[in-house]
Image (cartoon, rainbow, N blue to C red; front, top):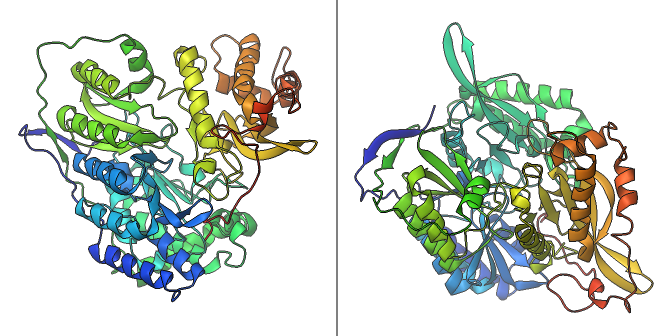
Amino acid sequence: MSNTSVNQAKPDNLPKHKINWGKLEEAEYFAEQVKLFRQGKISKDDFRRFRLMHGAYGSRMTDDYSMIRLKLPAGELYPEQLDKVAELSDSFSIGSAHVSTRQNFQLHWVALEDVSEVLRGLVDAGMTTREACGNSVRSIMCSPLAGVCPDEIFDPTPYAVATTKFLLRNPMSQALPRKFKINFTCCEKHGMVRMVDIGLIPQQVEINGKTQLGFKIFLGGGLGAQSFVGHLLEDFTPEEELLYTVVATVRIFDRLGNRENMARARMRYLVNEMGWEKFQNLVLKERAMVKMVLSVLVKLDVDKTPDVLRKISISSEMPYIPQGYSRWIKSNTIKQKQSGFSSVFLTLESGDVTSNQLRAIADMARELTADGQIRNGFAQDMVFRWIKDEDLPRLYAKLLEVGLANPGALTMTSVVGCSGTTSCNLALTNSHRLAKEVQRKFIELKIDEDDDLRNSTIKISGCPNSCGQHEIATIGFYGGGGRLGKDMYPLYNMLLGGRADEDTTLGHTCTKVPAKRVIPTILKIVEIFKSEKRQGETLDLWMRRVIQGNGGPNIKSLDDIKELLQPTIAVPTKDQDEDFYADYGNDASYHAKTGRGECAA
């Protein structure tokens, strides 16, 4: 089942955003609050809570600049919206945007007095920042392949959008104990539904000879300093029960979540401390009560009107195909369930994309996508959908012109890295820059062409809080600091064997790796794997076997890997290697200075 009609519109019928999520009065009110804050009429803590609810984080070690996070339901973007983000970044930010692991755009280093101007501009293009931060229901995610995935049962996008409609600015989600995350996905392979507060996968069953649509719903998962895998609520939740289930879960969290200790305030801690069976029974009872008492108010407005495809004119003259096209096709494209179309993933460096590149992407979407859209992805990437297979060479040539044709988007080469010390108060290391260094080296080594490594992932966080999702990576790292004598150096704790599919597993701690030894360490692990692998075995599967104690012939456990890595991760003195003691992107000696984290504010 697809939510896209094969009826084709006129060639000049460019789709525009259907919903304006923004409100101009919120931009005006933000400007007023900034003035009151500057006059000392609003306390620092009260203003922090206010600006977070409106999508503005403080930047590292300063209150004068903000990181603005856009709320993009289901990751959907239209060309005019991409143009607007580019314009606002050039005018008020640093000439680029950052794609997060939650499908959002982030604009960094915006002067506090300019935030309201950015909010006004976003409203013009149908976008908002409301509840993209703070203790609220955050952006509701949906797989970028929803609607085109060959393995999906039906397209969950309309449900993700409808759930956003109900919860955005809803009083019930304005002052939760902690942030709350909801993910929809198309199938088991393309989402992280077991690692969020509420995760949903489309299902269908036969009841009395009739097909019933619904979901598998997982509750209580989440990543952080302590992570938990979500639990399946019930075998099947009919679609008419979806919103009741969401509302019941949010209400229970609102009532029972820990408001005394922010470090243990996420719903996953409540589920763990209460016990799954007790929490499950509470949700089911609360859902029944919501249906009886609030059924008039709790309505899911699902718009299943099919998107209309535009007719794309294909030139009879084939473009010159530059070198590297076949490598790019293999690692960056997926065949859609609709015959003759593909989805294309862009390999961004740690999610960064310049304003000029955003404008180019908008133009390509206008010219070459049948649905006239872009979707942000789950791995700091962007996705063209509905590209005619005959147009793939033309798209590649256009991407090459603007520096967006790097291979490896769907392989281990595409490394996730949180913002780290480039902007975050809690970060201990520059995970953002390290992720770029790893990716550049792997592209140079053509790691993306190795099928043994294709399904594996590398994810890097600048601190234990897992914004870089290190715990669900084949090879994951989170930042810290090391010391030799009086000299400090940037360090990462390495975890192995994590994954986020139907077999969701949290990574196992292996060893500590100095920042400047991360790349050699990964390559050493690959070398060990190659010498130990069985016929047809991939790195992620070999890693699982070792963790389960079924390794061999020489590597029986993670301890054996750790022992073999010792020469690689050895710490030199500062006299022997001064660069070792500086983090990536910083020539000065390393220090572990941090500020107050705002993800918990």
